[in-house]
Length: 176
Image (cartoon, rainbow, N blue to C red; front, side):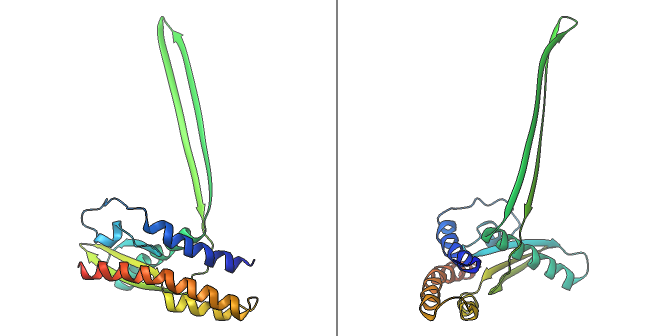
């Protein structure tokens, strides 16, 4: 099984798994879709400091990064702890120190994504990037190592999963 086929299968599972987990709204001023991200989408934001193009591109890049991390991410983490208890001068003492170090690395080719929504609220620009079902399905045609029957089966499954995504995005747009 090729790496691309594994990624494509993961996307289908991601769409199903993410749609079942409701997220809590955390930013009052953000658009509703920023805190309740539809399956198959990623969001990002950037503070507008005067250069519209830079602000927009930064928010979109952050949204694509979040979407890419949903598809594939390598996480390394280290939690280091220290505890001590004792007595000094007739007084008990305890001390504790914990540190948490984490690094997340994402290396993903983003085929078939589109900017689904943007909003400027105050000085914060928000963007939502979603996998585009049509472009994503067309990417199967470029996979040389798959037979036409395998490509068609993958196209069909992807289109079914993205029907749900389209319905969710349309609901968000109607709620504006």
